[in-house]
Image 1 (tube, rainbow, N blue to C red):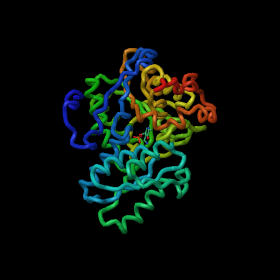
Image 2: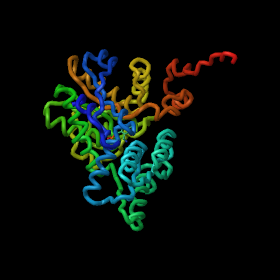
Image 3: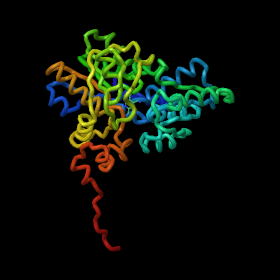
Length: 352
Ligand code: PMP
């Protein structure tokens, strides 16, 4: 399937979303005796797994007649969904307005502006507060609907079932074909849960015995939800961005999960540094939670199994945080020696 795709011409950036490689993670596989594979979502045009959701939500809105040329897409997002929406919107002639908590990385905000999104930065407040970014985005979309002649799409990724559908129709089938159906476990973390719900629903239809896992960072409620049945936040927090859901939403309401793991940053961050140092894979923090979770699931299944997870986004989106020694020290997280030493070598220039 991949070979066929590579031989094809994509008509636009929207068609270039998806069909990402599945990369064997060498050290995680060796450490567990399993084959641990990462779906390389950072290779999407917008450099994250959320391009797929952005594409699906806009194309479905077009089909429903909610958007006409020149229309406006509004969303509350930690950044990656906004980037996915913005690139698809540009390619199809829409504008984007993105509401983002100001705590999100500078790199994601820069990329959003670069992609033409109008950015509304708001204080990071809990979901229970009416001024949480998700509520502000909804209110803005409702207000703007009055004056926008070409339609407003409030993408609403936590409630919009086109989000998990993106993964049911693309990510899941790709994983199935790429592994030739030899996949024993799938695990990832949850932001909206679109990836987990969509991929797991597809893979379970194909293989009823597949083991589905959730890896949750500290401070979110998915570990308790899938372990003990109540969406209760765990203690502590996480520097990861884009993951960590605190409530049950329509997207995850029907998700069936077999195993849940609580993955603290102290476990996830070294995985990210190791993947960069030893495997040339430069990835963001949520991927550390995913791969650490895949290692735990592989250990539980035992040697000889194949476990797939998601490489959610590119590490260059977090240069100023995850790969900034001062930031990491301020969070009491480990900094590898090589990151401290990484600098540009200066050479004397020849006289001319
Ligand atoms: N990792 C990152 C970096 C993300 O931005 C997101 C989406 N917010 C996720 C993981 C989780 O994806 P999903 O919304 O499909 O659960």
